[in-house]
Length: 72
Image (cartoon, rainbow, N blue to C red; front, side, top):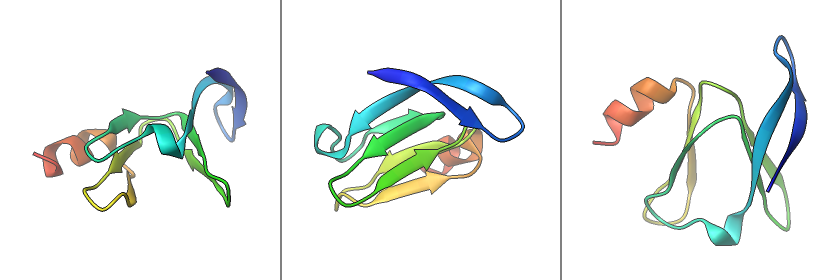
C-alpha cells in the first residue's frame, strides 16, 4: 500500500509501504519508501534506493543513481 508521509524539506509525499517479508534478495526500490519489520521501521528518502542483498540485509544507497550503477 501507500500513505502520505512528511519528509523534511519536501513536505507530504505519497510513499509506498512494504512488509519486509514481502521483499527478497535482489529487490531494488527507489524512495520514498517505508519498510515495516516486526522490530523496526526503515525509511528511505526520495532520491535514495533500497536494495535487498543476497543475505537479506537492507542496503540504502543515498544516491539512487549511484546505487544502481554499483549494483550492476
